[in-house]
Amino acid sequence: MVPALANPVTGAFDLLLAPFGGHAAAALAVVSLLCGVATILIFKATSNQAAIRRARDRITAHILEMRIYQDDLVLILDALGATLASNLRYLRVIALPLVVIGVLVAIVFTQLDARFARAPIRVGDATLVTVTCPPGVDVMNTPASLEAGEGAAVDAARVRVPARREVTWHVRAERTGTPALTVRVADTAYSFTLNTEGGTAAKGSVRSRSPWSGVLHPGLPPLPGSGAIQRIEVRYPPARPPLLGWRTHWLVVFLAWSLVGALIPKVLLRIEV
Image (cartoon, rainbow, N blue to C red; front, side, top):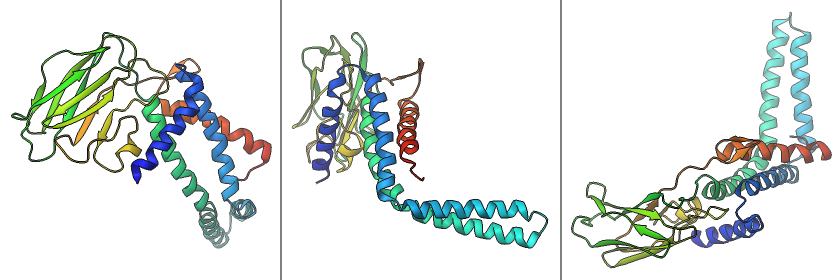
């Protein structure tokens, strides 16, 4: 059920970002703007604008009351209590919109993180591919191999860590593209691709048997439901997308552009928040 939900979301983002091709920075900026616009419109559609306006007016009135009667401790305390009560009413009014937006933003964040938080493996550089086996598997005596298709090569012998039930390979990118890799542990085989070309495609870095793995870490195909592979990790270098000439974390770029996207309809449509 959960993987079925995850795949359409990933596919929808692939279609949305396909027109940008390899221009990841432009894609992140545009998607962030659209998310800001969508967020404020969803807030308007799911909130009681009149109730929000009344709650804010009450808060403002009680604050002014404290300033006017600043020499009367009893009235100040009474106004302070009323201000706190009005704040609680305001939070109750905006609770539903925040829950709806929070769910949607969480889905968007997992997709954007998979696409913009990591940079591709550059040609000539190498990365690590680590497989974790389930309890009971002796990684020291279990056959394990990694086969690289055209465009990548396995550099050195595998490293086994029995305490963690891990087997690690050193993989080098030989040319731009998405070379295929296949891990075999005992009688279990798992195939996936390595991203060496950048763009807006999801760079899957982690996959486990957890039913939520495909939602939280999109980009890698599902693992076999049973067998000798419990988890796989591909290490990509961190990406630093630009924001007006300054390279930073993708989340900073997202917040900046989404704020701009939210402010435009808020001002034009006079949306209460």
